[in-house]
Image 1 (cartoon, rainbow, N blue to C red):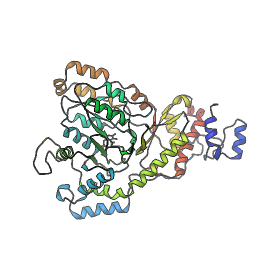
Image 2: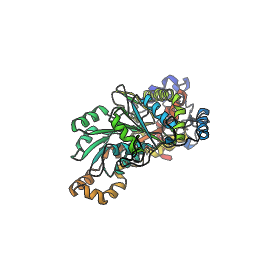
Image 3: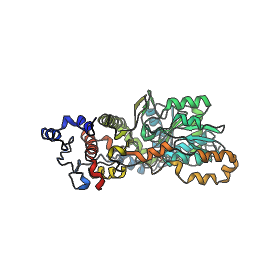
Image 4: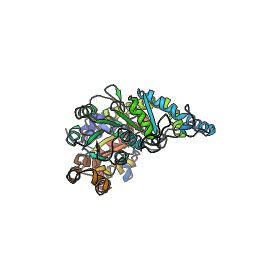
Length: 451
Ligand SMILES: Cc1ncc(COP(=O)(O)O)c(C=O)c1O
């Protein structure tokens, strides 16, 4: 295929007669709906693909939400222990029902939810939990705060998800649990992870912090492992500023989660165990409750738009959407992620591409600056007495030596993504703008060198 054949083929349907003539003469044609004869990039003074148009606002706010906050303020019930029928217990019931689980325990954040699970499972100093380096620091923090050892397995460079083979390689006699992260809001290879956990008798805490309502093989993410955790931090597809939840079907384990979350005090009012105070407050729950009725519709819209973007980018080798595993019925599309292949853009850096795209009116960004395996916490904990006491010098040396995740390093360098909670509830025209801006830059990639 000649270098511009791909875009020509896909955009032929919207190309005007004059551009077909231009194409035949070898000049750069109109591309999609850019209406930009010269193809001059906006960053270099050309017309942007998208002008004077707004993306859907996020976080989602409506009058119902404002009323719910006001009603909670006036009620004087601001803390969950003031009422068994307040917004927090009501939200827990509604979220469990939405997820199809028997129980839900809310917390003040996703990090708190994950940490509550680790603590409730009795995992602590001397134990190891395997997780992904491509995640929010909260994942690692939830393991470290119990003084257990987060062991990082590498990821699959196409799906950006935890690589089950590397998970299995990283199991030691100290391993107690796997914390798979469903990164970007789409399912990881959970069949394989669950099989590995079963074979080695390990618990599974799903880090579903980005994955509200997504489904894998007919089941909601967060309901497949022993426990599943969600975040309601502002950027998420269900949000209240800061908030979290644990879902599960094991009554005893979920009761333990409640007790840990409630400063070690059980539903019976006895202070029984070690636990921080991680209670969600009534305002957070009021905000969450008020948005639940529209959540399924927004979720469906994001999936429809992601499917459309994937179909428009299908076969385009230069910006490749995150691979979805077989069995992905739906994703949350908290993030719409792609891999930028610099060699297809005349070796121009991702940063030049992203700047040019921004000028066209479409915002894509990298994810985190580096994998969690490269952050200073690794050296910090290796110098701590508790780790030196609980693990042999040989184990800690091996840990140091094996904390390389080359696939994660590559993904960090390649990811170009849309923070999708808001943008992906936009219109078909919004999605066309995204693809047209990408294709305009691709067609005119020779101009990137002058940025
Ligand atoms: C994958 C993942 N895990 C854990 C967390 C932590 O959640 P929170 O920010 O609510 O503490 C987040 C939040 O961004 C996340 O994306």
